[in-house]
Length: 341
Image 1 (cartoon, rainbow, N blue to C red):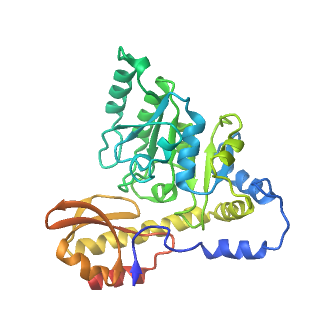
Image 2: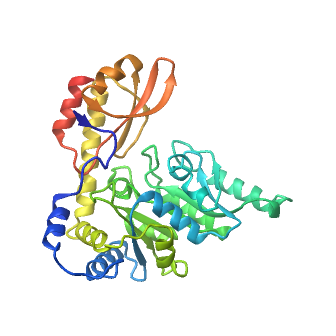
């Protein structure tokens, strides 16, 4: 059995395992104040070309999204997201659990349209009953989106400009950030992305780590006591070294971007194979998530050999499924999938 269900099926990159083993018996302080965490932060600042950036290591994506949003919003504010956004669909109401509503607007292949964002914010802030409503307090997007699509530099500039014109911070969920930046369709660099948003995170869980996300406030703009808020929200690891060592390794010798490019290379080979097999694509994704439409009668036989993710019902006889590659996907798995399609 091989798996294309997600991009965190495997454990961690071998170089991370080597570093963890080599440092295992070192006695270090906890809660992310060890020298490996500091080294990782310095490397991330350099990669982002943001020398003043504040960097925090959190344990996972859901905790990161809910913690960042709760820390940056007032009690009466909500966060604007595409209706397909991860925070509103696949995080079990974690944001609402902190007392903040997810304010949804239409998603177009997972993306927010800048014009619709402006119209929504204008309508919300000029409504005569504005003070009886949940105030928009932040704009959230993911890069890549949940549909594997990515924003162009122009789109991101427009969204950032609109958010900032309403004095709202822009938060970019980067759980798969490496795969977005490595895509041949991407015209953004990491420093450009850091310049345009107010907070983002560099995903580790899906890009080579056992676990962990690196939250970056590019201009020393973290909320007061964010470190303490992180612990309050259960997103801080006592053995913070485990996160610091992993990110220090990922940002040594370009490893993060190398393994991201590998995932994209495998995804493009997967995409080409699916086209050869005559598959119909549910959406045209330029990243590591590929979505195809299969006949329902083929799903069970395929599942006997290949694990995949059911995505959406297309019609009574067809279902959209997702095949995801990762930093660890071997070419042999794509050839194995070819056999069973």
